[in-house]
Image 1 (cartoon, rainbow, N blue to C red):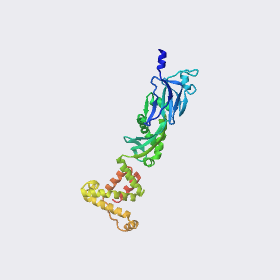
Image 2 (tube, rainbow, N blue to C red; image 1 turned 120 degrees about the vertical axis):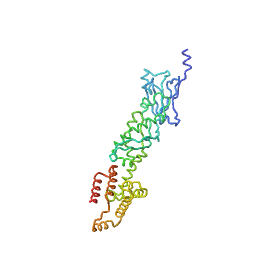
Image 3 (tube, helix red, strand yellow; image 1 turned 90 degrees about the horizontal axis):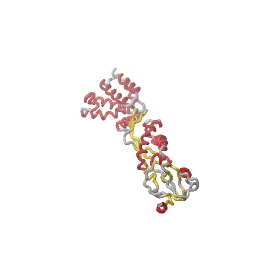
Image 4 (cartoon, one colour; image 1 turned 135 degrees about the horizontal axis):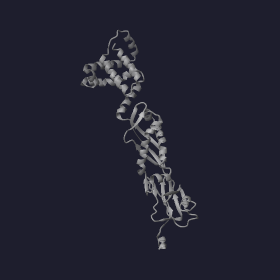
Length: 349
């Protein structure tokens, strides 16, 4: 009976794997009830590695090449099976192949805005996305930590795990880069470098080598983007407070005109229709004067004329309210606000 069982057995002479290009990372050679012949041929192609596992314990690991399976080529397995001489009978062992080629264009992104601390804006909620590529760097570790005894383990099976690692390390990457948000958004390469520094050791813990990662976009929520747009506009006119007020005047005139025409808006709510029109005229005069090439000469001529009050108390209060809003949003510093406040209050004397 034992002789018949031996005759019925099928023996393996060639062990190899031809990848199908479907994103498979790990593949177990189908053993069924078969055994490996002494001197069988093992073929490991470029971009592959093979691992022999004996009774759940990882034994020998093979890189690209062709091997004749003997005690010399299977030293760990020889030790585990207590072969004290050249084995002559067939043996059973699980054989796993791993693809080590680069898996490219893997996507990552923030499904929800994440909160970071920024030195310019305080707490900021941002979105970001990009792509990355990786390969299996340590098949033994990948087998024990990730793929295990599954017949097939694919890129799709690993996708969620790797995305989670990327998102988990974004905040740390931003903090370690030391970049404020404005510089971060403008220098995505530096952001990606900081993110890679955080991710490389995390990927290595599961036998994965991160080849590269890119940041394709960093964006702010809409409400914060509006504040950023205002700050950019302020930067265009420089630190001169007079020019800044001219910029704000140009931004405010259309709103005052809307308030005057519709009985609502900033001017309508603050002072009513008549005051809104008057303030709009004053602001327009100030803007025209500031933009005129002869502004300095006109200003000198004005100082020689008797002082005429052109701004009412209501006008001053409204302007102060607007400046207060800008200070609250971080567009004006406290010193800039105090300076302009003192300038406006002098006009009431």
